[in-house]
Image 1: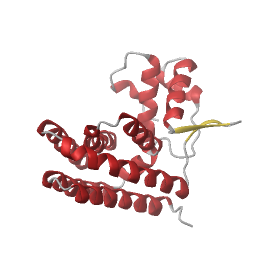
Image 2: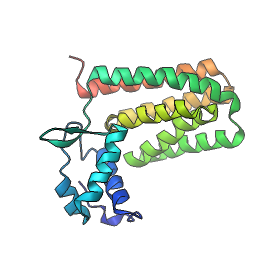
Image 3: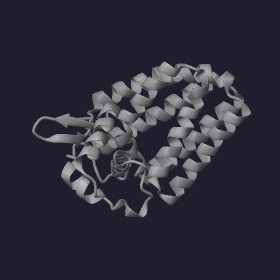
Image 4: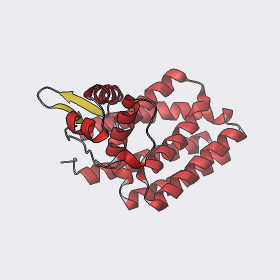
Length: 222
């Protein structure tokens, strides 16, 4: 894992540990199935084990790490069936939320979504995966927030969190970044047209291409 000394230290040591572990997962320094060595993380960050454990507890709730007896915490490893189930749930929930959100999106909301798309494209050009993931999340959730369905959105966020490790792998491939930016443009066109059916179809296609790409990258289809 990279040295975080160059970045600003957050207000608490637990938050510091959490953000450091998130960066390591996004950067691919911690890969699915890999053990998180708490003592090494604590030593590198210059903190005790307690904040590292707090951070891991948060990541476990999000589904990004899993506790295994005799091994401790490992970065969550999903098989194809897990990924398909999560993406199917996202399809159902995000399609419903997008249809309800679209008529409620005002100009300010549209500008925020378009800004997120531009930020995503800029990060892709720089090869900044962490920034691209953050902008991508703003883009997609910005489409849905106007639906005013807090329980649905909470579940959608949990589903996103549980596959963030795999999304990071997806965005680490240049061809995936190009594919995502093109999809975002088509989604924006559907938004500007105010066409809910087209919007849902573009979201479904974007999600489906992502899942297919992950299956190919991980070679988990056998």
